[in-house]
Image (cartoon, rainbow, N blue to C red):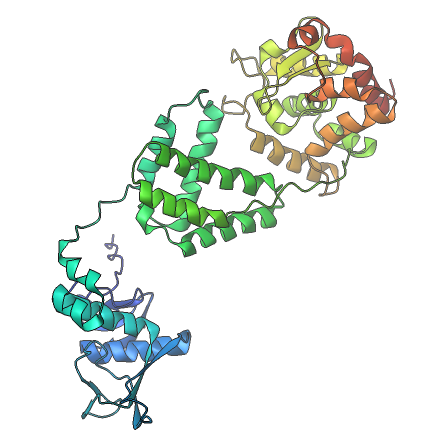
Length: 451
């Protein structure tokens, strides 16, 4: 097996400065080339290669130019000299392109150079000049103290930032789901920005992440919460690092940049209850899949999201045919009266695939069934049943909320069923009286099954 080549790195000059992220140098034959496009070469002479590279770069992406004027009082400019090959020598002369002769920089000369070249010249001047002399020439006394500056402390790595987030003291421990989501979203962030430490993160990295997350949401038609949850979690992790007291200045800087991570906001949309015909088709397509058949009935019976199915445990099902559970998202208690058809479907599923897990629904490999897997299986059944692609799993919950209200059931009772805040009712009261939602559950069953 052939060995993999080393990853190309930008060329560094004798002072360890990177000329440009795209300019590389072959270690073997010393030829300068464009990283990622090795067929574009500029020769082996450093000065000429840099000049040719900048000519090539200007054609690809023209850069802003900076004009330097050297005047003698009010005298007009005597001539213009374009900045040539020796852009790194601000010492009174330069080489005119296409000529081997050196032209003196005198009063009245206009030097035109790219902004990046200007800063490179200034960096060289600072490196090669004593701080005291530099301060005198530039008229900036503070520069005399450059020699006393200490190297910056190393910035913390992004992996360490997430460890600090987990270690941060908090009133309520993170659930396993929160830890898992946080880990996945932080890894997604670090993969997209492609940085190793907090100091590496710049404005363009945050913009790149924001654009990537929004593009994923648009492409896959996810809800605005897909973006909102991720943006908020990235800020929460960085805020935790600040609280823990490590690399505080860099964290503040990156958090300021994160102000660009603006959530799209919740879009208020009208409910889209699934139609009788579409739900019947889905049930028919799921006849051979006892688990998903039970999932569909439970979701309609109780007004469940896919995440509610994911969090459902055996203990939530009562022997009297009711369901009592607390919503993971809001911690609000919800109750439901199960239909006989729903109970039979659950029993048929457990008879076919018995297990001892506290979680009611398991995947084919025996792990708790995740919400995203439920949605994917819904999409598969939807296609097999010939149901339109705009029908979503969440439309089942919309139906459980809309149908009872249209049937004249009180809004208070529907709130109990959906797990919404409902006045001053206590949890103990709901636990003792789950049949408060009996009329709502009956209205849904009558609408979809006629019984």
